[in-house]
Length: 258
Image 1 (tube, rainbow, N blue to C red):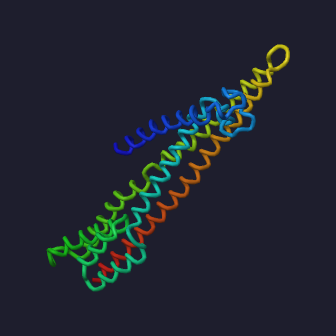
Image 2: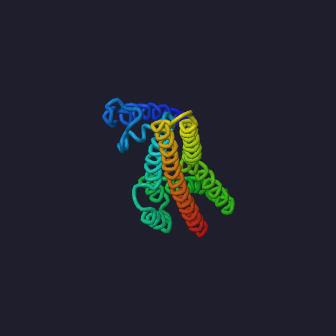
Image 3: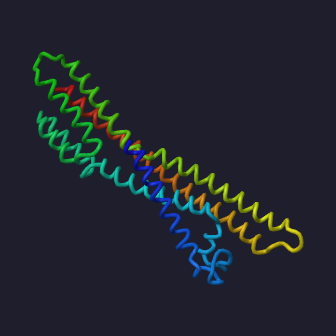
């Protein structure tokens, strides 16, 4: 529910900002040779982008959403990594476990935080609960329960790491389609200008071609950014998953040796 609210608010805010950019920045009369705008940018980049037409608003909106989600993912994954390097944190935990200092290992997890620490803490907390019963709980059953707590904790952490990645991938696909639509609309305008009786309307022809190329470029830029970001974050999530699996396996092996 929270994720859908975030995406909805982000979409509305990005559209409002994109509309303001299109009208006030790209469509500023100062960007056009006649001081009025709308048709003759004469090499001015902002004015040229404005000739891409209303679909530029959607492309700018998708680009802003891309950027916002990228920053959100960077902050989230940084938080998931914990306060210090995972290798140093895991070294502290292993040292505490080898001394049978389970409270110290749990305290290290509390200080570290992050996805790996949360999973390890869940396993150690469950192990403490089981060993508090003394010999009434079979050792093999204890390890099975610890393994189950690790799996449950991992299932809770993984969605947080993967959140908004589907949206990022979807934006890349939509941007490609919007860019293609803008290309088609621009070419329709260009050919319509050529089809007029008498001399072709050079301004309309140039405007149609500009609209086609601007939308193509905007769609490709937004899609490329989304695809690269999506693959980068998927790789980061895979690394986190590997670290969680490796850390939980080592913890269980140490507990098993006890």
